[in-house]
Amino acid sequence: MRELRTAAELEARGITRHTIRWALKIGRWTLIIRGVYGRGPEQPSQLDIGRATALVADGVAVGCLSAGLQRFDNVKVLRPEVSVQRNSSARRPGLKRVATMPTDTSVIGQVRCLNAADTLLELASRLDDTHWEQSLEFCLRKGFVIPEQVEAWSGGTSARAKRIRRVVAGRGGINIPHTDSLLETMAMQLLRNAGLPTPTRQHPVFDPATGRLIAHLDLSWPDLGIFLELDGQQHEDQPVYDARRQTEVTVITGWRCGRLTWDEVTLWPESTSRLLASLLEQS
Image (cartoon, rainbow, N blue to C red):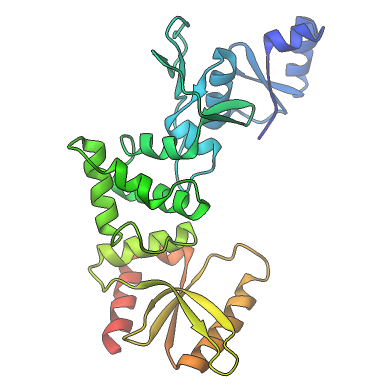
């Protein structure tokens, strides 16, 4: 994330307004919002604007801004969301005065933000079921929340509690394994939306001769003898590693393998659903 500085900080360092104007002219700094500058010539992103708002107001980033700072899966920062003390000014867009400021916070990108668990709970009031499930899987994967916390949140009759119950029920309960990536979460959602059988997550496969763990399969149907490998291509050697692992699993289990890429899941869900339905039907 780019470095941000308030005008007050720069002036306290002895940097004059003339020097600031020159730095803006040559692209060394860029005006993010009134009173806050960012290093470099790039145009401000929504994340920059949210951070700048929290920084200049001495507030706490909440909601999608907090999630964006913590790199939650697929959460878009569209505007500042910042809590400030009740006696503070709230004239800037995105500021909200609160009676009690959050205390369990961490500093990310120079600004204070809610802890991940509280952010996830807030998002249940802001996101739809699909995107909140993606955030839930992310937090379970990272160890930011535990199943008992999510169960506690699901009680009551509020819209937020109802969303949490729906999402937990849709994923098959809170105590099943989490997904290992956003792509895996989206593949699960694609299968569910298509009405296809629910796969097993992270099924272990061992070498029968040595007992060595060969792989935890992304998604599989052990009773049908099928498993899916999700090709996110996060690393340069990932496709080679996956192909090697696929060969070992196929030799040991005799199962058929299907592969899904990011584009197949995100850009062509209907044709991908038909392909998977055909694969399952053949087995």
